[in-house]
Length: 294
Length: 216
Image (cartoon, rainbow over all chains, first blue to last red; front, top):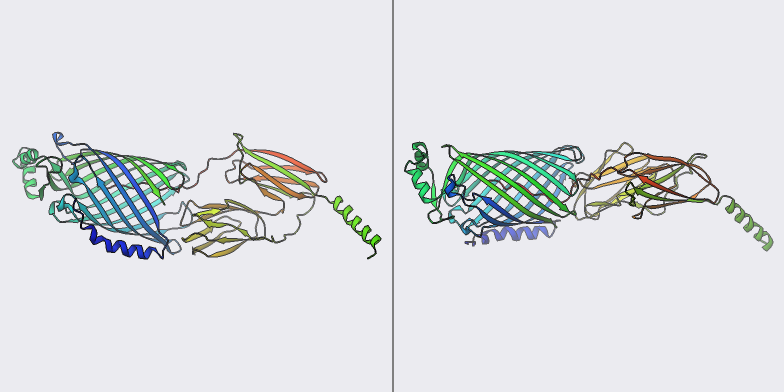
């Protein structure tokens, strides 16, 4: 894996360490095992590949109440993703995130509006996918009674990559609902829609066929106009390509907690993407994670 | 003072002390499953005479913010008591109450700060932190000096009670229905009472971390 770019992020890490000496810093670590069906985002069944992956993340942050009801948070976060079966998918991110939250009133049931922005450097086995991810989001949360919490979230993201195939952007809206039937158990569900560009993949044979018109002239013309990269990520000749389209995503989550600092997450996600040429991609992911707040 | 006179005076004091010798109440608080209930407040309000006037406690009453929690969870005090709120955490807090007996707010409460609040009206005051929603504590403000809080074994002892009739009340943050009864305490009497409380589920805000969406 090509990780010398991490050196560029080290000054930020040092600055944060110096600042944290004077500020109260909290830490959070997470580890996750996931199983993804159609990890390469292929549209043809013959190209579907399923794989396990391992992800770890670490966050160090400091929060401060700036005015009554107004809080700010700065954090430095890093994450790593390893897919043993398809090592070209391995990647890592590192960067700062800032969050400002306004609480309208007192108590757990007061609505909270949060705005966040992040700039994350991405390092990956696929050189062309390395770059910087810029992210902005606004979230409105409202606890409804002692058990339920509703969230509405809108986000914008742009990944400026070394290669055009991986330079993608999207806007998205989500609605989420959490229930805490007991203080040790959270049940959640959410749904959302992405609108923008994303990376899909295909075997050399299928992509070549599509370009040759096997899937119709509309798709052939469209695929001939978009950036592609033969990454070989899932098999020799595997082609990544950038398409414009929508992605509908929904998920269910079960999160038991053990004490105040440790929780587990069991999550199922389904994504259904459709590109503007009408090609569809389905992806299912099962996640089992553990999070510890220091 | 001649020794005979001094002996007479000591005897008179001893007799007077015996005449007003106070009684004790021992309470055992359990839930419907028979498990001991901690943090229940047992109070006795006199029915035959007014409660004695408030005398400030020699020891300051404190509710500490530590480990992003209020400690203790339940604090019974006599009306007129000042409670100190030292912030022993390294982070800020934002103490507030919207309870009728004492609405107040102390935002931007820095690490190491300590302020006091006067609780002068009887009733239950629920405390929260507007930054850390899981933080909760209760100040039970009483008009009587005779009260106690149950320990982990569910035991609470009220001592120094003059003989007479009392309105006994048990309070707990999760109490489903009020527990009130009249009790009579004889001179130098000791009364033992057992209470079985019907408690609601503990609906505190979750503190443990939660997962986040992974995006697409």
